[in-house]
Length: 250
Image (cartoon, rainbow, N blue to C red; front, side, top):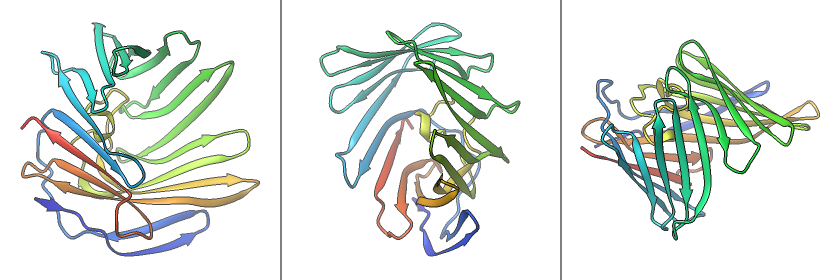
């Protein structure tokens, strides 16, 4: 088992951005074909652990995500360009139904919601990376834009009426061979090329920019060089406030 350890952290603030350099104590191979993800366990220092078990249909499409509390997501595929996501509680009462329409690359381009006039659209660049999300509800549209460099999202911007929210991202020089943020799928464009190392939250109000938070990431790998745990730290802590464990079918 291999593990990346964060060491000797130092920070320097230049203008409105925060750059953090973290040392790594090991490396991993880039050549691996991911197996199917069959479980995700999220643990936080403030919430009970959440476990999701994933099952697939005969085409290796996610069919169900079952959570330990009894609620679950059920996915239907009525045709090659539509996915229906159904969220049920522990008594199998439908809580929410979302309709996804896919583009020619099988990425979600439109999401609509049953019993709602809300709609979300997704825009991608020519390389297949998500660059903009537009959510429209009650006549108002909120947009999130992403800047992609070298196959990685490096900047996310979300304006509101009074505050401009931004996130900047920095990466390890190691390949990311699995879409950990979407249960192993790439429904919303390509996954980042590299593993995330740092996430900085910024907010600007009245022309004043403040650093709201800095998160640091480390990883543990199995013998197949697949990520089996992601640890997330705040900038001044040696103990992660959140960890996510991943199980595979091989």
